[in-house]
Length: 443
Image (cartoon, rainbow, N blue to C red; front, side, top):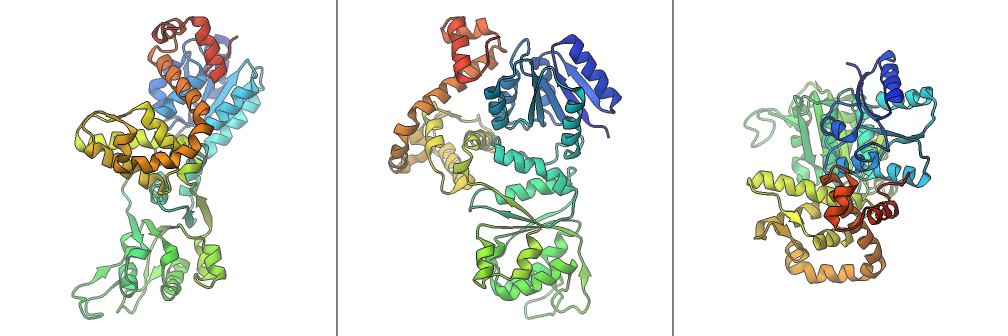
């Protein structure tokens, strides 16, 4: 299957030249002359790379890209091209998650090299992995999943409790199994009593011990031809680590009571919130097992270090909760958004989801306020936030203004006159604000 390129360029000569060159190089290319016509296709999986001019006749490339992220879409890798070499805009785009930025005039060979490099790490037409977030850190993890999915390497996912380590593991599994036909077996190693752990992992034969009234396949066999996810592997007892090491090395297991071993073909993903290297030094974790499972390490940053993901996850969870309850999704009041962004989230993504779910259950209105979000804990949360508020107030007000103008721009399809009228300001004032807030630059 060929890689498909989304080209968004309003210049007839350049657009036609690039579309023809992509075809000559063996790519399928869809050429759009404005952002609005490209938007429906970008919201769906299918493109390996998007190449977009920044200055389009209807909306800017930056507004287009930011709109995709805010809508919860997972856009393909973006390469932006422009005739206005603004370093600050390039930095903004890269921080949003764009791959690169080229200034006109550019060498077509350079563009092709960048496109090929991005295609090499993509699965053509991949809808594969689950979206992980809008922050640069999570998009970097998401970008490496197709290459990891194509290998058989054992992966160790690390990070604080609640950051979404299992979510990353499921995304990796799905990237390697887009059709969903292979098993994904998740095991919490710390939740199984030590006396039962071997039987649960490797299985047993009927009569192997008192209570074994039938043959049972363990988690390794259940995950055959799929993925076995061992969560909280740092809590596994030392005696069990010896047995696990042999299974990981040889990809063979022996049921309790059996005389012959059984081969298993699995992708092994382990996860822990603990520092295994420190545990190895303390003699609490086997060094040989540590190096066996730590072939590829994926570290998931805590939510407080990726604030771009807070509202992204919040909207995603609200949509999911509404779908489960067959109800209208709750919206977030601007004060609630401020509270979500200011709160440090010690419980990470898990705490955020629980907070939203609890608020949706007890909230009688369709708009969530900070009081509705945090309930009885709001006074304590407000005290936690109070130390941050003075320092962050100006930044928050500016961000709110930027988000609001961006939303109205999108609602009016980038038309400056209509947007200015909806905001109740002049077009000149709107241009000044857009320049100041980085939404666009005057020509």
